[in-house]
Length: 364
Image (cartoon, rainbow, N blue to C red; front, side, top):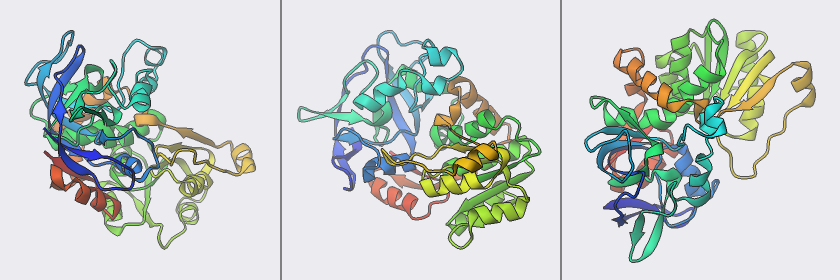
């Protein structure tokens, strides 16, 4: 089967014909129908995040089950599924205490770039290839651990299902799980990519009074206004913190930072009102650190917290999001950018880097 492979950081991905093993116990073979191109993929390509190579990228995907291994329950050939880059076992301390995004299984993918039961299922000429985040969906097919899949209704468009598995559950989940009292209050969202725009949709859904969105790309800000932003800030020409204080008087109740840069995290922190909370979802380069003013933190009773995968309970919240979409409550189709063939993945990645509005999609 064909897949897009990263052999070294900084180099273009390479289209290769790989061998894909049969699914082992607890594993499922999926025919990939759509894969979103995410900034996390770009972090691995640039070297900001580390991975073992050669590796098949892609962690935001959807497709059809083709075959199941021994001991698999809940999936059968023909099922439509969403791939999750953060699995959930349902049994560890974190799953049982309301922090499933911190499931103990999640570290396995990051540390090994393999599957949960050990090893990889990809190879070429005797060389083993790795799976990014256990998904490796920049490919025609993937073998995935059953804990990394959620079955969905067959009539959900695959492009929508793919982006719900990462961008949407991260952006919407952060608003729903980390900003539970946002109704009638204010939020500023830094970064209007797929995650940030998903957060705009959620903030509009729960009735935030002010939804302020910042980016440096005019078309993204236009899309944010279309989705419900009450104000936008072009950070290429305007100072974010000054503008937020001008719009609100005292600062916002919440900030969602979806970029992962120390400067934008600090700007968001300084734009909080007393008692406000900044939620950081953007990942930085390995080892990158943040500096914030201590007195503003203490005297303003402000908070800075992180949210991985929207701090979501994905087996529950992902189907809920899709039900809202089917009911016409969530315009998720407006998050889709241009579609690309699998072999054009490098073009899609460059498009993401240079101003895509929403998510570029690979269609194997």
